[in-house]
Amino acid sequence: MEPLAPIPFPPAADAAEDVALNEVDIAIALVAHGAAVRVRIAGLSAAIAEAVAGIAAARAGSAGLRFVVERSSSGATFTVGPRG
Image (cartoon, rainbow, N blue to C red; front, side, top):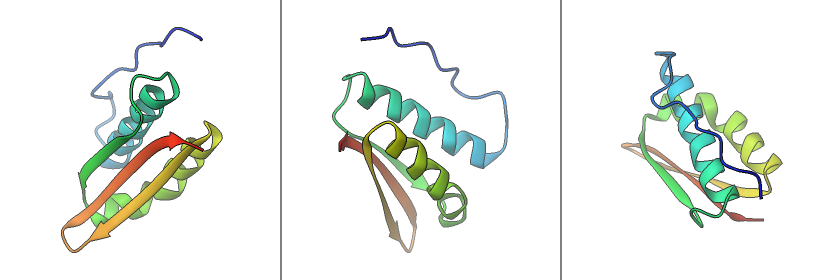
């Protein structure tokens, strides 16, 4: 297993989309390295979730992880993991 490289948090960029994708990258790293079975990212606005869901799903999929988007009237939640 490769050592886990630090991921800067919060990211230097201020764009909400960049922050959301950085949170997804952190969730992927946690699950991929066995530190978590699944990670939920809650409190996303519907607009941000819509803007980044495709990229986030592709990143999770390329790591061999499940990716689920749950939408509600108050926003969205991403779930990364478990494997496969």
